[in-house]
Length: 245
Image (cartoon, rainbow, N blue to C red):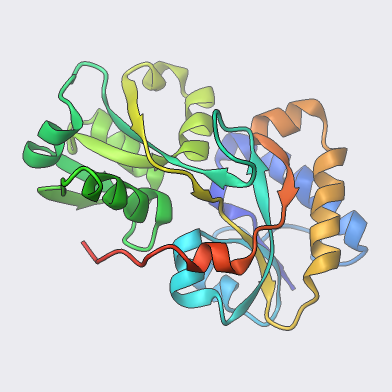
């Protein structure tokens, strides 16, 4: 069986994720001894052996919703955000005060992946609502890489998953002071937990809830996890599929 929690599994958080999985496995009374790391996420997401993984909202609605079972949605400790939702921060270098219209017209926007809700779909909608569109883009493959592209002046701005940015900033404080989170997108349902098609999601949901409540205060704070909520598939599927870059 496969269990993977790779979406926010930064090196400094691997111990906390291991303890979270240990709690889930204990509550379920079955599952692999260890989390799967370093595998191809699409292979894991679509495997009939998938017990638990986390995906992004855009892959879920674009390709996975009829191939997997939705378990639930994590509730993260995000400022001014509905329960079970998240948003993207628009970031720029702190020494570059250009407003969004100028950045979009004359700058380079870094994004992680065209199938990313937070890195591509959300900022594109944010720009379109202001009758803007990025003049030039740079695909980076990962949110952390987008942050680095902005810091290294390979890009002028980027949209980064708020959870990722806050988790990264808590660890790399020296680099974080060079970043200005100057805007944010409209909240959408957060990254869902999924299991293989045909699996009963309720025991998995209950095990996650039990494991989160059993974490130490420090681990919950480090992971920014408040709990798990139920958001229906229809709320994910109601969001539009963005055009490709």
